[in-house]
Image 1 (cartoon, rainbow, N blue to C red):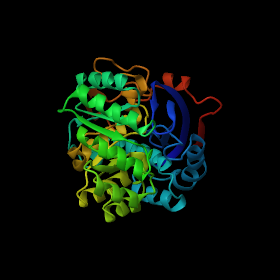
Image 2: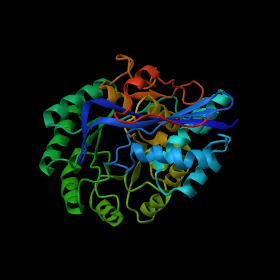
Image 3: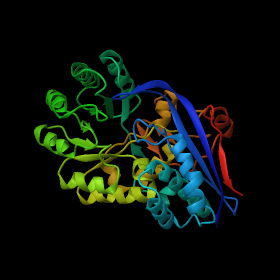
Image 4: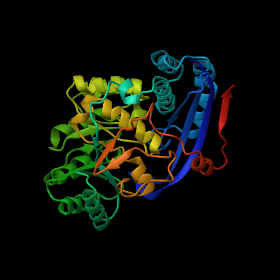
Length: 390
């Protein structure tokens, strides 16, 4: 089997509720869909999730340029999609970083292979370690009243862990938000916070000391990504576990955080690591160090959700924590796709979410089918799909 043609489709779609993080207010998702066509009529698909320049630094234009000008003509066209190790290594040799673009290709390769063999991607990644994956729900930011009310709805929907975005407002407001949520959900529900690099060391030290009494599961990325020494100092000063996200992208950075005893765990994103193949190595490093891993997401559609569901289901070390890949729920503004079926996603049927869990699709490959009617309506304004190959 050979790859003969590659399509890239830029899409832009609004999310039901603006998502406030430390800095920007996210109101829409800019994504890239890829289709890898083969000479056997099998087409593999993948999605970037939100290209979110503010978070990772990659854009729709940059990702499409890499696929169309480097990855496609120099590495993919004419190649056997089964040669994933070779393909991923060549992408790494040719292009530094840009892991979101590499993950897009990696996802489509695994989907292609799964379809060829007639098995779900989770079987290619090690088999089924979890039949259903426990989730936490990301609340974003808001007022104490609105966050508390949303947290109660989330718990009623079956979630046992809520996560707040902090660092975008004054320290006093963040503290009050956490207090309100903890009082609303009680002591048996986990609560964690994510600052998205929103504080400097002394801010983080001040606020986390004050938040200790609310029994937080963890505090994610309280400091800028480059401040490894600050994370290590902070970890020794507070009783809340410190998790890294933006600080842990490349494998070398994961090693550095472990060597400096800077974190108690990791928030992981497949696109951040560069796809399934590199993600298995990424998590293996964390496992060897005994540090837990929780998977997040980058606000994509049902395609991205399927990728995360397959990876978590197949990765035993991921069974130690609950995870945050709830992108279709945020995108469409629902809590449970069983009671509120999603019909306007980029796929015809999103992975099954129910009672605070997600179930990996059982179909071949990623197990999802693109909804071409919806996709045609959300092509990014001013941009066009591209095709290379025959």
